Each structure stands twice: as C-alpha cells, then as structure tokens.
Length: 180
Image (cartoon, rainbow, N blue to C red):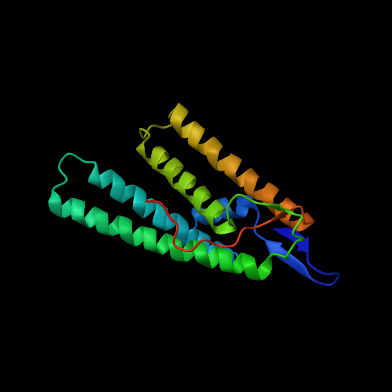
C-alpha cells in the first residue's frame, strides 16, 4: 500500500501496482481494500472478453456461436463501464484534490486500471496457449506481454507518487467510453 497524506491527521491508502496485479489473478482478493475487489472482477471480465473473441475466430463458429460471442462481448463492455466508473468514483472521493497547477494525467484511474487488466488478461491468454511441457521456454510474445504488465504496474505506481505529492491530478470521468 502507498500512503498519501491528505491533511495533517488523515492518510489515504492506495493499493500499489503489485497489489493490483495480484488482485487480477485472485478469485476473491484477501485484502479488504474496496478497489481490489473491483479490480479482480474487472480482470475476470477481460478474460471472458478474450475467450469470446477467441471462440468467435474459430473456424467452426456458426451463427449461433457468433451471436453468443457478440452478446458476451457487449455484456463485458457494459460491465467494464460500470467497474471503471466505480474505480473513478472511489478515486474522486478518496484522492486529495490538488491545485489546478498540478499536471492533468492523461486518463482516469479507472481507465489506467482497465488498461492494466486488458494487458494482464492478454498475458494470461498467451501463457495458457503455451505448450504444456515441464519447463517450456518463454516465448517472445509471452515475455513481451509480461513486460507490458510490469511497465503498466510501474506507471500506476508513478502516478500514485505524483498524486500523493500533488504534482498530478486525475481527469474527471468520461462515463460510457469503453472500446470493445
């Protein structure tokens, strides 16, 4: 956890990037931080999205399968909007308001965590697709995806430091903006 000072006697606990990444793979996050529960659900929705896309691309996918995949994709998109908004609402209520001179971050906290979840789900999909051997070599694309997860986790941690110090501020939410 990263601690940020709000006022002399108040602190703000924000989950660190490693906690976010750990929550992606958790069935039920053990940490009682409210954001980690949402993060775990978000990662599961991204895994469902990846599975639907993979199923839709299979040669034997008929119209009924494609329609089911489309419904699953739309359901995941709606759920992602809700989950991103939950994270953004939590951030708006929790993160201290910096001065207007603070640099505006390029995306909301929810969008950043969503991007982290998409990258993590892609990495997991590549890992599952790797041949099951005793010690399979790490494929280049799998390693690159793992590196992307680590880079986004570091970027998240850097943002937390900037928010804590008042150097950065978060944009207001843009509800409903989620790509398929």
